[in-house]
Image 1 (cartoon, rainbow, N blue to C red):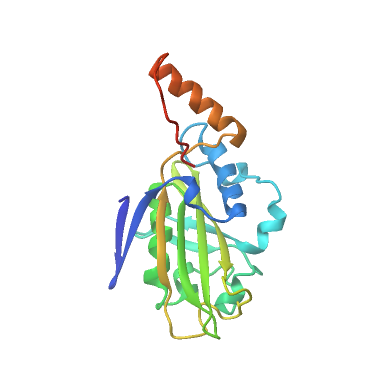
Image 2: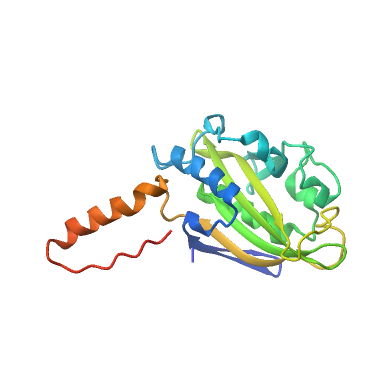
Length: 226
């Protein structure tokens, strides 16, 4: 267990996880770009260094935040507008504090995820089930990437994806359209295997390293964990 946040009557446990916990291929690509920058000095990179491929294709699902450390609890301000996910909340929020934007009902479910990212300076991944206005279950996947300036997390980029196993769903007012609260499924701090290697080279590198440790003539079974 990485950490526990208590907000009201909501307790969020953050499990320790590797990058493979992230399901979305596009979110994994965003994370891999972050990992390559992180690997240089084992700290979160500066936001101006972050230039993932095909960033333009993802902008509608990304929200940029600035983080203010002048108060005991960090304050996050939304810096994006016109994003796809703003339809889920019913309005855009550029220039608005995140906790004001989501409202008091959702604060205990959302803000601890951002506070964990700020406090640890590491990516955080979460999944929650929400119901659209027709009662269809929608998986709401959130990947938070932190960025540092002067040893403090001053920016966060959130990638927000929605998925419905039943096919189509109504995203309009998804987070405000009914009385049902989100049902958390995953809260993970990505703090293991913080590197990115080309997939074709992973198995070969691991075999060589394992054989050197085992010595000749020793039967080994190699299981690759992604």
